[in-house]
Image 1 (cartoon, one colour):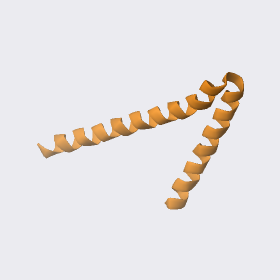
Image 2 (tube, rainbow, N blue to C red):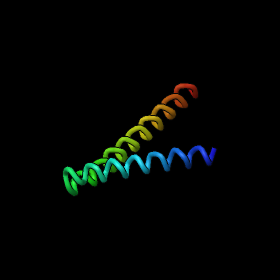
Image 3 (spheres, rainbow, N blue to C red):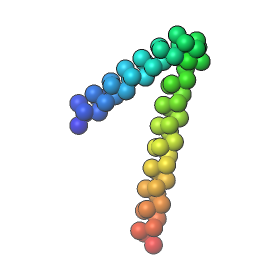
Image 4 (cartoon, rainbow, N blue to C red):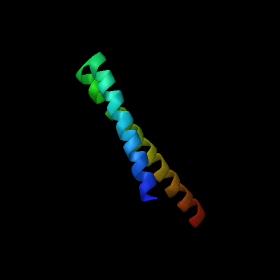
Length: 63
């Protein structure tokens, strides 16, 4: 499982790097930072949403 997660991490890291470099050539500094911010905020949102669903399910099954 560690190898799988490592490969996925490297794949998304390379994808993010290539996207950042391509957008930085077109839009400058905002293009360099924007993909990282989008991926980061999306990750945080999905993580928070899933954590809230798990908490909701645990509370529902407890009562």
